[in-house]
Image (cartoon, rainbow, N blue to C red; front, top):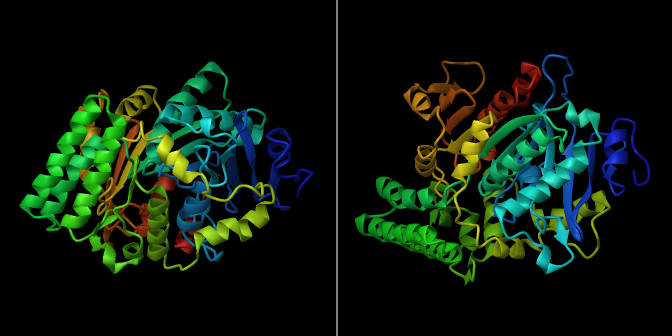
Length: 462
């Protein structure tokens, strides 16, 4: 469908952008929004086949934001984590489409299929990225009453959490001022890089406890973490990014290459071994190698052997039709990372506090065996919140979480909620919770979004 709108998505495709496309049955739509002159952001929306329409509980939409910075939600989040198809284009039983419509955005510009026509247009801060994302949402939502009726929950992973909370504040303010017509369902932060300082301080003690570092290794790790803390305090953020790279390299050497996405694994036990490196750029580890490492890990955990780069630059690019010939998927991701080197180590705890004070629902979820964004570090930054409900939250007992409704089954995690703040501890999961624990991830997103989908659909999917 190139020049006309489908019946189902008439408003979406006619009013959002002259360059929007979609499937004939209206189940998918995609397009570009020029968020600034010569800065183009790509989006892809899937409508759930399980959509339930009723007046009391509206069907939700999940906006997925990937990490990196520079990793593609349209590619990795979609085909390697929660979308309807895997990298071999086989159906994914645990797709989050069972519980919500899914909106993937290649954010910030330069990520995935998004691109800039001039290098000066890359974002240099999380705030810049937030403004661009809010502009995209205004284009999608302000003239579309159908989308406006579906509450939007932002679910973010890794560095995407920094984008999410920064954009969340911008979105909430735009809604309040009337500039954005959108029901804001809240934000979920999955293994998110909210406070880099707290994470780097977690690595030494955690790895010492699980025998991947000895006392001397832990001391060396903590010493570099102290340097990072001082550099952050002095506003030397790019220097802190480089010291972070030095710390990761030191830990890899001292631990005989522990897996940063799952500290129970040795990188030599999986495909990560072929891409691990100590090569550095002025802004830390080579972003191209980081992205390859990221993707290969997801493939290995999902049990697939497809090549995401070949898929996105081949069959998917052909399907979408509107990707310029000069644009290759991920071709500008190195620059995205490098331009954000000055913001990479900045904390975004204050933005979480702002969201809580505005009454926005905030969910934090963390994989038990993640290292890069370890639960130990997440718990540390949560305790720095100025939110007036923190003391009462701390005093609550956790509730165990099981897969399905069988409370006699294996414990898969714990959850604690107070007012508009929720925390999930996901057992047996590393950095990529939807891949490691798909059943619990799907149940969690249903609870977060208050999805009205039939229980049978979830049971059958899992």
